[in-house]
Image (tube, rainbow, N blue to C red; front, side, top):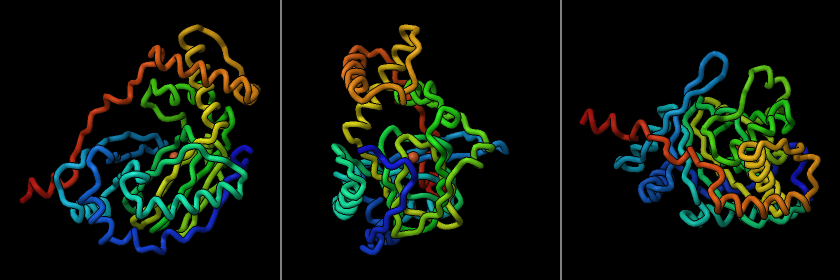
Length: 289
Ligand SMILES: [Fe+2]
């Protein structure tokens, strides 16, 4: 079975476990492994184009970091919740498995990142190279989900992101918003969308806590590998690959196998790992102290 062709909202009860309170989050931030933090700050121009600054965890305590997220314009991801915070992951994963059964999907891999984000902050237009089920736990956020077609997500840009050859996000134009489906997510709701559907997020004027669960099925894994292989063929070998919709699953599986060999041979250069971090959480406070 494929991922749903339309976005879908599922109810969940994970928000009722008391895991997203200020107290629980401050304690979590105190002990969460520093290497699993991603700290982003986005600013936008009038056309909706963004600039990204990335920050470091620094040595501030959990309560200070939490206060800074609530007061600022920050987007903090705590990666690998599946290993780093099983108390949250276990109930989320149980709900996820029930939702997957309902959709007739058999996931082979799942990982979670806990997202703590400031009131009013926004995540730019992007797609995820996996299935996603977004569990909302606290606050309110508005999700814009766009059709995953050539107009909103050119295959050539998709390949670039999957090959990780660029830090660029997708081309976004405000006019696309007319084509979006819009969801105001409340605590106790989980949202999924068609595979690779571009989306962006606007927090409403409150502090937000969500767990973004990304997953692969064999079908999504083959498709991602096929995009990688076709991207290499296009860039390295000057070929013009067919639209993925015209590539049958058996051929995607073969391309996925080829992509593993290409990765081993280092045929796509990863330009993302060298991004420099430009600010540190809690730094203002220490400087003032
Ligand atoms: Fe996303």
